[in-house]
Length: 149
Image (tube, rainbow, N blue to C red; front, side, top):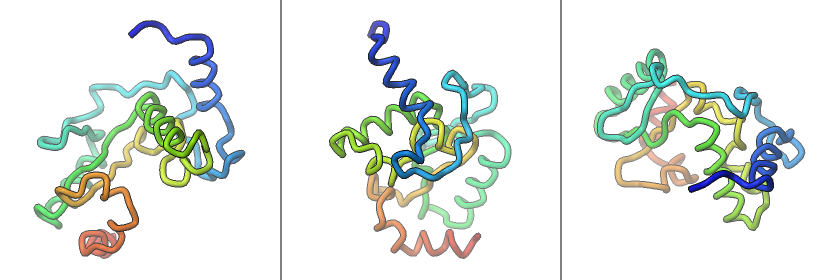
């Protein structure tokens, strides 16, 4: 692929080190170093999902959810490092004509996602991207997750 240009590096640093509250994102920033890496020994692949979770409580919690909901739930997103979060955020911003405020309404800016510290997403098998829409909140699966706490 080749090295990043000076302009590309400047954009990456600007997006990562910016105070996201300037464009309306009010969440905490758990990852504060652009070069922060995920220790591959700390994660486990979830069979059949293509995703990874941190070993320990995140994996245990997903297994508890999977047991409680059976085949009604899948892991739709697991561990995400800064680079992947950056790629997702830039893609979302581009879909909104570069508007970082609109992008940050449904996706945390790089460094602000808790997927780098243990969070994960679940969804309904076969729903694909629809799992990341308001439609998911209107499902029995979502209500069951709420009931489980």
